[in-house]
Length: 237
Image 1 (cartoon, rainbow, N blue to C red):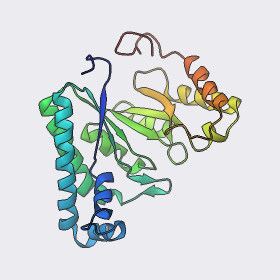
Image 2: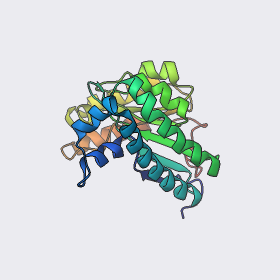
Image 3: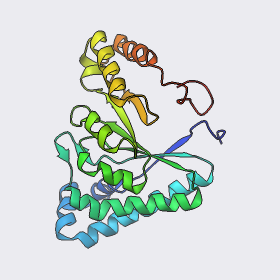
């Protein structure tokens, strides 16, 4: 077990992403298209499948929290770059309660646990719901389709907003000077409070020039987070 304060984390199957996978795998899989139809035409069936996955997620998360892991990371892509994969009302009626049940169970086991949600794509309509459920960090705020400044103004006091440098465009295809300028702009957008993280929007792509990675790193280090922003180990962020 890692020492407390070193931010160990775990990833788990999640209500939306894993349910989609379950619907398309194995002999019993109905296929992604049919699952989306079932969400509307047979919601009881879809809800039962979501509950099954949420139950597995809860057991894994509880085991992790019980082992002393204090940051649980969940990956549940609910958006595309053109919008959400299902309507916000449908997400709220089926996916949000599943998430709440998972987080509530972990909080009963470990009230100090922290929760990180990764969801690619534009999930702007439900970011407030994500904060309501109790997630502490949202990653990424994808620059190709989301407005980090608007979200920071509206919800920055409720959830840590990851201001992410576009891994698809700026980081992979821009010039080093463009990468540095965009990194600085993101840091300035978030301001000097404690609720900010600056990072790439996803894994660094293989075609990304190393010069761009270094430009990002230098620009980020050139804007220290201040005395109130320290790594849990005690060293500067």
